[in-house]
Amino acid sequence: MSELFSVFILGLLSSAHCLGMCGGFVVTIGAARQPIGPLVARQLVYSSGRITTYAFMGAVAGFSGLYLSRYDSTLVTVQQVFSIVAGVMMLAIGASVLGVFRLPGLKSLGVGSLFAPLFQQLLSAKGTHGFFLAGIANGFLPCGLVYAFVAKAVAAGSMVGGLSLMIAFGLGTTPAMVAMGCSGQLIGHTARHRILRVAACLVVFAGAVTIVRAIPSAGACEHCRDEVAQVTAGS
Image 1: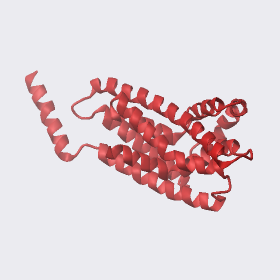
Image 2: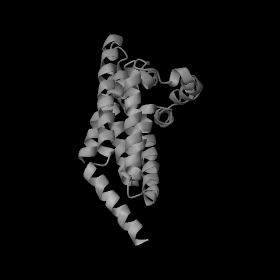
Image 3: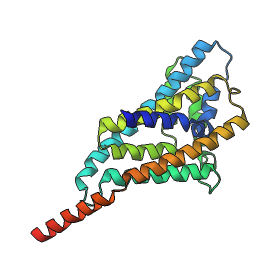
Image 4: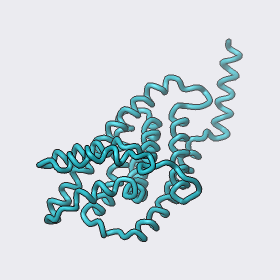
């Protein structure tokens, strides 16, 4: 439970990254003048579509981790490997946002333009199903932060664990996305830039913690070496 709560908080604190990558979609949903009630409902339906995709990805990743765990060695486990991968990705994303180096984003890859006609068609559909389907499509857009949490879902080593982890991450990103969609001017450019840098520092910190937690301790390594020696002697 503490792990899920920490993932939720990290999703909440890294929401600025989501606003920068996909904020335009939620702003489009809130562009029409309408009462706040229906507007919030549309934003929640859209975010529920995103979370549905994240849950699917988490379940698949968790099942993959469970399957791959049969290939664990006495020195390192699949969960440790993917935890380190997730941590490295978080470090890279945070460092990129802080300007240490550049990573290709949606804009540079042209992915947003590629999906624009699809989102326009879904968001113009009557009823709420279009917003839900648009959210599902949004969840599949390439995003380094999402991929980092998918790697953590693999490290969970179970379908339920991976699914729960990705749902917690999606729920964490929802408040900022809904707020941004309900009022595009709620967070100014300068404030968003500052929040983004703070979020980047938190992502770097979380990545470092994830890597450290995944590295076996000295005592565990010595125990692994003893096991290897026993197996070698027995053969």
